[in-house]
Amino acid sequence: MYNLRGKVALVTGSSRGIGKAIAMRFAQDGVNLVVNYVRHKRDAEETASEIESTGAKCLVVKANVANDADVLSMFEKIKEHYGRLDILVSNAASGVLKPVMELSTRHWNWAMDINARALLTLTQQAVPIMPEGGRILAVSSLGAVRAVENYTAVGASKAALESLVRHLAVELGSKKITVNTISAGAVDTEALKKFPNRSQILETALERTPLGCLTTPEDVADLALFLCSDFAKMIHGQTLVVDGGYAIRA
Image (cartoon, rainbow, N blue to C red):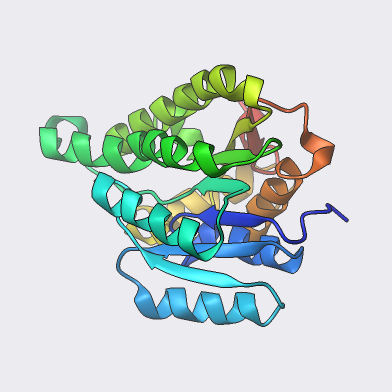
């Protein structure tokens, strides 16, 4: 339907959760994948097996996207294996959940490097091997524009990520490469389990969501697939929210 068969996509942090859902949705539409992970090798290998069961090809690469040397090495592998990259999804994320008065410089830099600066390094490596019509997506969260308890460093880094997307969109538009952000609502993933008030977050989200259901990783993946299609060729430099209407409630 979306005419993406044969294209190549890198989805960072794609061994589990939202990243895996995006990779699987791409594979189901004929896209060949690069699955990136840092710690969860077994999960990455299982994801690759599922991708290959759809008939798509898959390259698994261990790389910390906050480490420039790792990113450079990963792209050497991509160039050797595929020779090009059509889609880049910056999904890998991390950060410390602490009150603002307990945050250290290390906590701040960690969140900024992984959640925001990584997109810059990934883009700089991807664009030279990305043909006209390429797609770059960043995965953000509502914490970029709303104050969430203990989310200061991560929220600020997500806000920086969304700003970076807009600047990249201006600079890369002439190359016919679109750049957009997907901002997800409360999604019940492994990452959310790190929140001490996880149950409260999910209960509140469910209560406040007009559609009456929580956002799933597959919902985010559906939007990613659409944004990588020709149907979205004029959507550029935007932050698109997928949350069942949660963010519109006062």
